[in-house]
Image 1 (cartoon, rainbow, N blue to C red):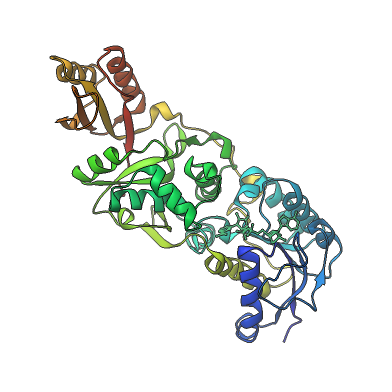
Image 2 (cartoon, rainbow, N blue to C red):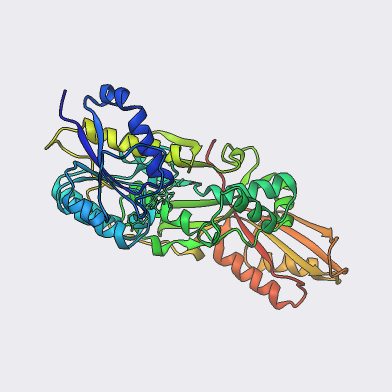
Length: 439
Ligand SMILES: NC(=O)c1ccc[n+]([C@@H]2O[C@H](COP(=O)([O-])OP(=O)(O)OC[C@H]3O[C@@H](n4cnc5c(N)ncnc54)[C@H](OP(=O)(O)O)[C@@H]3O)[C@@H](O)[C@H]2O)c1
């Protein structure tokens, strides 16, 4: 049997400690499947005294991840600390620079400087694996990077934040407000004390930026993503969506269009009978549409110690089985030096269906004025419904419109025109509709 593969583990938190436990308890099985033993020989975390639920007493302890990356007797540097900058960034660069393979679950780091890190890994002839960085345990990186080789991808989209999906599911199932569901998510440990990063869509955006690069062979462009979170989704929107045969999900969508590549994260209405609409709670899902395969949808746990460690373990096993000096799969699917510049499709030219909810004063002519604004902007309507409003002000009514495929620019102009009519009694709500191809 070949020499053991020596692992340096930076981070012993939710994912790192799970990984350490699995590597210890499954050591024999892993040695058989990988053809060599996998051993943790070095670790680092902030607090040396904390119980990690695994015996690491015979493993070399390093006070910093940078020192471990530079000096430890290891073959693979596994970064499970998190953070787009600082120690994670410095230690990963040091490990790659030293010619070590690297495995990370750090989407924030990859979204910020993944292309640069891929370039270093490719120059050094080492692997930089990051399956756990997107949708936790779902093997979407491998699918895009390896299994779909030769396919031309037209769209990749998904539910990639369990916190948001949990909140939206509870709102729908129990008729609770966004605030009440967020509090419950925090109590159950599904949401951080400061949930902004999740609920405003930034976390999904990091993951989407990585998927876009793998799908379309363009440089990572996390700052170019159109972003809308779920905090202004109301229970009225959820009910109206249900009445119209839709459910609301926070989707990250990357799509090839004639004018460039769209990257957007926003609350989205998906048809009730689509498979992705059935993905509830903290579960994640990623769909890939490509010319040869057609439509692929993967559903599974997007977070959690074991599920995420499972993806990290798969990355480590790939390294254990790889031959020194062998041809490597490019880190981002396309060699870093050959990634194309990202060409952004402007959001104004996004084409799709729209749900528009207006709270209007109960005056003669309002309904006709709304319809006129739509017509003047060339928007054709699938449905338009007016309802009495239970809330205040007492003379308010709700108008709900669903459009056929139209341009974002036209919808924005129509909504501006409606606002100028001075008959709205609240901010208009606009939610984009996304239709899966077949599933
Ligand atoms: N949790 C998930 O479900 C999940 C899912 C997908 C991806 N990820 C990614 O996996 C990574 C780890 O997440 P996690 O949830 O395991 O985080 P976590 O529970 O907060 O653990 C972080 C670990 O890193 C250590 N650490 C932090 N800063 C350090 C530093 N400067 N030097 C040395 N050690 C340091 C901490 O040490 P102490 O324990 O001593 O404080 C802790 O052990 C992140 O990139 C995250 O985005 C997590």
